[in-house]
Image 1 (tube, rainbow, N blue to C red):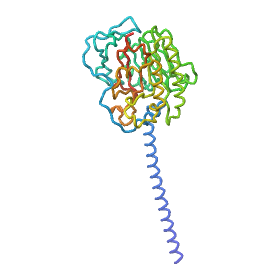
Image 2 (image 1 turned 120 degrees about the vertical axis):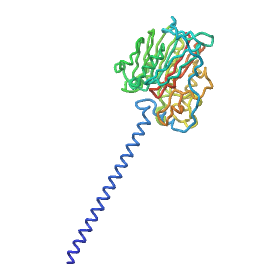
Image 3 (image 1 turned 60 degrees about the vertical axis):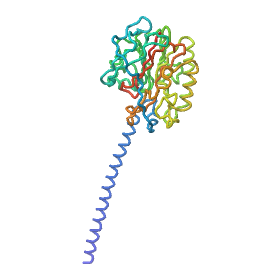
Length: 387
């Protein structure tokens, strides 16, 4: 009997042990599933954070913009003051130039897709000598032209109707461009990088340039597709996508080498004809050019070295047209991270520029930002000139 009781005790004891082991295994798996779910959520959040920097030169900007800071209520665009009764008139000078009849050029933004701005766009009509603009140049970092075309970005290009359009970060080769990206009435020039889905610049021009050059003539820079230069009768247009200093500033030395080589390239062109530099220069030059300067002192795009590089370029006889026209204007940005509702709060950076040879400055009528045109983490910018 004793042995039978002992056997039943052992059996129950073993059953209890197996029950506890089974319960432990069930809890362990439940915990593992919870951890896996948490991991997947974190991974998804990280992918969302890096969305604007994926296959891009801008991995640092989303992180940099996470710091808390005040937003500005000031708009980067001019407030409409007067309705235009007549649209721009074609002029014989400059690349299929436009010459407006009114004091304000007013264009309705696209109402769908990339253009959610239903406000009236305005710009100053004349230069410092009272001459009306007859050349419009637009620039836009599209962060992938195929992606922006899916969001009807072509509506903006058609509505803007610029004489010259420069695009950055097209992220595809010319042969991969959908038909919607081949705009009627424009000559198209493409400079893609060797790495698929990375960098690349493009230039569209109503008037055929005298010549077009791709790159700087330096393989270490040119393999990434960062510069395209169009020569016209009176000036050069240089479309560019400047390298970013990278996450943790790991590519800052590369950026500084680029600054030197690119500055020399622009100076060589400037000796022949005036230069119009267009594009994403990947630097907020002064504290006024980003929402949170104090917390971004060591962020790519706002390091001391990058800002000094921009200062040095401007000292070589070049002018930042926006700050020339609006030296004290705050809240004027061209880039916003996708995180934390940054665009709605206008927590941004001014990274996109028109930089001109000094002798062209008297010809500048206006430099505006299409801050309500969507489709990319950058907005288009537009330059109005009399040439």
